Image 1 (spheres, rainbow, N blue to C red):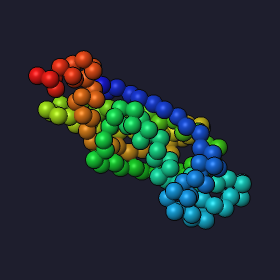
Image 2 (tube, one colour):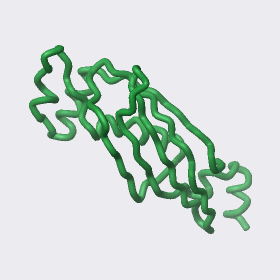
Image 3 (tube, rainbow, N blue to C red):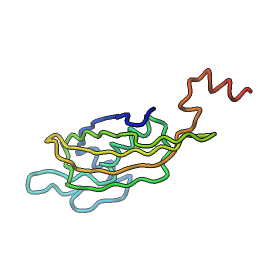
Length: 138
């Protein structure tokens, strides 16, 4: 990981995703259970937020603060592509302080969500296994 690195991932949301999230979250707002005039269900904001959090999971990132700005709705069938940029890496003894900023766009290239996340990556999770083991053994 280096400052300026960009990591991206995309996902298409389905009606099944929305229905599962309804049950898991308990959020059954009418816009999440009743199709709009175009026959679409709206994706929950926090379900939309799983796109950048998946990138964090791939980095073994442990969030301490997350901020999301929702710019336009996302509907079943929409594909979001999220690009996260590492904007801060600050090594410490046990972990690396990390800050990412991200932008998520729909299949039309329109921003639907932006934000940032601050947290840590444990040093052992970033070091090659052989180096991490030798540090623990010393």
